[in-house]
Amino acid sequence: MALLRLAFSEHRRLAVAVALALAAGAAAAQVPSRAPVRPQTLDRIVAVVNKEVITQRDLNQRMSQVQNQLRQSRVPAPPADVLQRQVLERMVVERAQLQFARETGLRVDDLTLDRTIARIAENNRMSLPEFRATLEKDGVVFERFREDIRNEITLQRLREREVEQKIQVSEGEIDNFLEEQKSVPANVNVEYNLSHILVRVPENASPEQIESRRQRAEAALKQIRAGTDFREVAVSFSEAPDALQGGALGWRPQDRLPELFSTALAKMKPGDTSAVLRSPAGFHILRLSDQRGGAAGGRDAPASVEQTRARHILVRVSEKTSEGEAQRRIELLRRRIQQGEEFAEVARLNSDDASAGRGGDLGWVLPGDTVPEFERAMNTLKLNELSEPVRSPFGFHLIQVMERRTADVSSDRRRAEARRVLRERRMEETYEEWLRQLRDRAYVEFRLDDR
Image 1 (tube, rainbow, N blue to C red):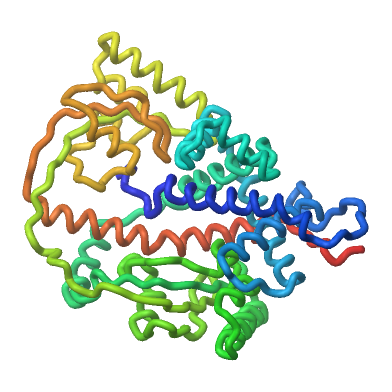
Image 2: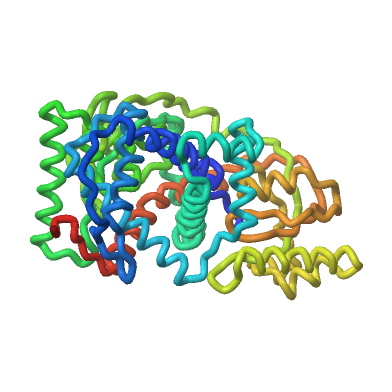
């Protein structure tokens, strides 16, 4: 089903990104007062990404943010030249993603951006004017902050479109997973608090390149075993998106981790560091900080839950349909239904979802089957009530609830949970592979050493 819940909700990831942006921005604004005065030089190009450039000023600004993030997180920083190269590589990958988003028509319009910033202000218990004044008092230019948030939303939606929406799980894979789980009931609820280092291997790498990358991973592991803080090594060596946070992945359920990770972690104790592990994306090192759980949790017990039979119309936001255009279309369709047109007929002719041929009918939906934004809106509706336009990672929806019932759905629920688990297992691996391919396709020229 196109509406299956994503592994990480947009709001949770965006909240993390925004918290970092706020912390880094406020702290970075204070750096000049502590930093030594140095002779000013003209700006210069330090990297070329396709047809765009990254300047020394861009790099210095990002370095200040990262250094303050590391200080606030109490993550030991590597030498400045090592950190500078790591930060520049992150900027290159980010720039390549933003370019691809623009080239394929992915845009975040001002209305969406304004609503997001209003939510950030509300979450900080401020009005929007108070929030803006606080940022500017801390030396954060509000327009720059707006564009940073626009980029965060763009990157999140790009990941959803290019990676998360394309992960498919077959019924046969679900059958195999459920059969396998019968033999390992004790591990169902194990959770690991872990950190991670990734050394990427380029697509179609030569044996010499693979060996060079393996040696880099082994050098990182050697430093860890010699007593260097794992987080510092991650900042120095890792090429994963979380590298500049010390490689921290936080708490992850065992059954939602890639099999490579879960197999290694099952043999580790808190405090252990894995050997170098090989995957299609590259070489990995895991650090297990803690673990909890381990009981089966009664998963085979009958489950009586409320089901909802709903139908919907979806107008997707895509490279061909902008956010503003999609919103205008869904509002027009809503007015047509309010004026007497049949919901099913409007859905058949206009919905961008696979359910269009059924008049938008999604059948009986279990809690958790749809993305959070859709489920929240659906649960507030009365029978036959037409929703306002609902924004989800897929686009804009109109929702109508046709029936509700309570039923024993233990078997259905196990299959739905298995589908989610299998999707989430693949999510990070697939994303890493997609990032690697995008980076490999980009023309990148480093000029950091040019003087």
